[in-house]
Structures are given as structure tokens and as C-alpha cells.
Image (cartoon, rainbow, N blue to C red):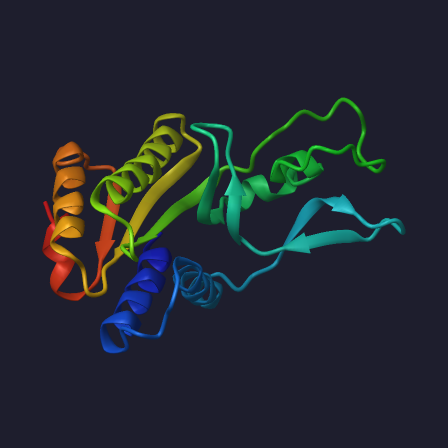
Amino acid sequence: MEDTKNAIDRVIKMIDEMPYIFNTEADIKGLVYSELLIEYKEKYKTGRSDSKGNPLWTNRVHTEYLIREKGGRIDTVVFETNDIKYINTKEWLGIKEKDPMVPNDLPYRPVKLQDAIEIKYNGNRGQKALEKEIKADIDRLEVLLKNNKTKTSHFIFIIRCPTKNQINAVNNVKKLYENNKIIKFHCNNEYKELFQK
């Protein structure tokens, strides 16, 4: 989990040094993903194989990971190593159609996470929209933690040239989560204090 924090810290440092290194939230997700791949290089055998019986492999870092809790997807995740063997059906990614290579009796089984990461960029959103999106992301992370589906949750909020309304949105959301000690909050440069406890 320290490896994940190191990757996030490097992304935030990059953004502090080059605020226009990204254009959209998807770009930030790409930066986080590429830095996590530096930390988590090993490959792992899944529970699936190809048509010749050769095992299929993966790494621990994935993006847009489907969850059923609170609906939706988590921006970026790091899998628990012991759970990767449960990647044996398309349902683990939320793909609905039946796979002819998978027995009928295999249930939906999400892979347990070491880290769940949500990323938000202030962009051009108004105060209410930004508040709503931040709250939804943090609520999803809280549910995963409470249901023991992840060991650690991170919320990354990147601010570039914010409006007064956007700062108000962040402050309003911060009040909702002042007592939250389980989600790790990350923010760039002079806006770090918005999420410091």
C-alpha cells in the first residue's frame, strides 16, 4: 500500500511541476495507471486459459473496475495477489454474455482489492455537480471498505485554476467527511490543505 502511495505522490508531483501535463480526468487516470505499473511489475496467473489450455496472465493494476456496491466503476484498482486466481469468468469484469469456456455454476465473484482509487478533476463543473460527483466517489470507496472488498481507499482530487464555487464545493464535501479516517485523501500543491485533517 506504501507502493500505491508512492505512485500517487509521483503523479501529484508531476502535476505540481507541469499543471498542463493533463487535459482531462482520463489523462490523470492514465498517469496514475502508468506509475502504478512501475510499482507492481509482476504478472500473475488467472483462473482462465486459452483454447489450448495455456494459462492467461494479468498484472495487479486495472482501471474502470466494475463494482456492484453503489453501482458503477472504480477508476483504478490494485488487486490482492491471493484473489487473482478467481479471475475465471467474464462476470468478474461485469461482462454479461455467457462464455462457452466457463462452467455454468461459476457465480459472479469480484476480485478483492488491495487499493481502490477514485480520481476527480475540478474541470468546468459547477458547484452542485462537483459536490455530487465527489460525494458519489467517496461513498463508493466507503462501501468497499465497510464490506471488506478493499484494504485501502484513495481519493485523488486535482485542482487547476479553480473557481470560488469549486473551492466552496470541496469545502462542503470536506465537512461531510471530516471524521473519515479510513479513506486517504490526496490533492495537488496549494490545495492540499482542503483535504488535510
